[in-house]
Amino acid sequence: MMDLVRNLEKMIKAHKNVVANPKRSELIQESLDNREAYLSANGALATWTPPESTGRSPKDTVIVKRLESEDTIDWTSPNCIPITEETFDMAWEDALSFLKAKEKIYISDRSLIADTSYAVKVKTISDRALHLLFTYNMFRPLPEDIEKSIFADKPFTLIVLPYNKLNPKKYEGRLRKLPNGQTSNMIVAMDFDRRLGVIIGSAYCGSIKKLMFTVLNYMLPEEGILPLHCSANEGPNGDTALLLGLSGTGKTTLSADPSRALLGDDEHGWNDNGIANFEYGCYAKLINLRKDKEPEIYNAMMHEDDYLNHGAIFENTMMYPDGSIDFFDDRLTPNSRGSYPLTFLSNIKMPPVGRHPKTILFLTADANGVLPPIAKLTPEQAMLWFLMGYTSKLAGTETGIVDPVSTFSRFFGEPFMPRNPDVYASLLGEKMKKHGTQVYLINTGWSGGPYGVGERMDITLTRRLVDAALKGELEDVEYQEDAIFHLMVPKSCKGVPDEVLWPKNTWSDKEAFEERARKLAEDFSKHFDKAYAEKIAPEIAKVCPGK
Image (cartoon, rainbow, N blue to C red; front, side, top):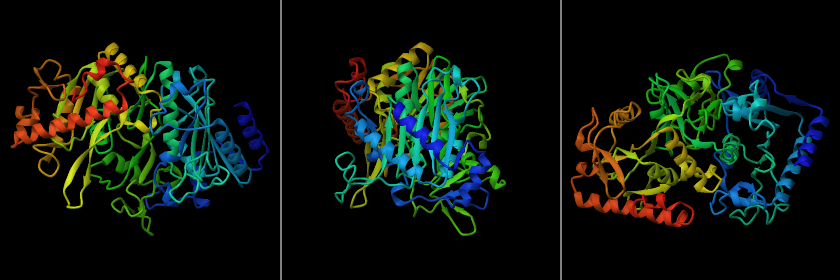
């Protein structure tokens, strides 16, 4: 490690034009001067990436594998792609060569994690002012007491070169083969042991954010800290709630509760002090954004300000010549994004830390229409549903019929959870037992039948159920067990018709319900057996649907 860092320091010292920790306004101006971004009508910046960089590149995202730490990483996961230390070192030295040739280099010294007792220092080096501005939006300023952090002597260093490319011939046999037979010229690489990262060829700003999230998800469990891919908010009495869910489950909508202050919308840690947001900002999906549906995100991106005070970034969003933004045009990509500081939101908790969570909500959008709108989970069930990270997506057939497809993303963020799965599941179980946290499964999907037959859960009903869970109204009501999914379903909830709580009641064809429910349970059982049968404790396995 020392040689790589020393070589970086030598290169920076010898370079004729290094801008270290500039003012935010300077990065905004340089992004415009360098034509890395253009000014929108409201003062925010707009940028567009090449087609290969409109999202993450999972197959180019790699982790150094070495003998002393290989047992801590789940190499059976398709998201944990190994490279050798030698390959990483080659990419690092190539990055230094690229940097040497740049007219200007930008450096930011920031941190992650709002609880400074375990904050992590992050040094980012790039040739792009815009990507450094992204770190100002998303990473936190260095706290004055950073030296008190348990990671004070374990900083992370990241080199970001969005528009350089590796030499495919040099990396033949070391990086993935493309469909055309050539070796990839892109790399998003992490060395957990040496706390180094390098991004070459990916202009997607999310590559920076998700690389660092993956790094934290590796670092924290060793200290007994549970990293979570979730939103978090706080009630008037200081009670903290976490909401976990994959895309399309309503996580953003349900966490934006005007009666509760937002800690953050994406990445949090749970340690002995409670909950802490990792980030300083938000990186929101913008496609089809409507002011009446998502007013907080809309206002954060679309408020008007002098451009030097703004600094929100539209990434791959359609902008017309007059600077106006079209959120509904997906010709560039359906993954258009917006980056902005948390302070652009109106109802936030600062600093974004909170008590141990009183309530955790697992959100799923079950397009089969067989899961109850709400169910209470035991610690073992919570570990199981956390592990499975279930939702369903819709896939069209040639005849135009749409049928739900079961989707599992463990811990509701599988690509970013590199450790062995039992580590994260066990930490959740330990913490919820220790702090008396209640966990509920919320189905925001379909009722009365599957997609195409039934209807989407009424958001008003879902909000009432969420509110009841957060206020403790469901702790003392009577429950009945769903024998197929091993779930405890409340028999009543104030403001919700009793018959809606038991999904079979909403189906006209009861036999079709039973058949569909058994099919989903089989999907759970097959996925569990394939992915986790030999990795997870028996007490968790026995509560898996279909068992």
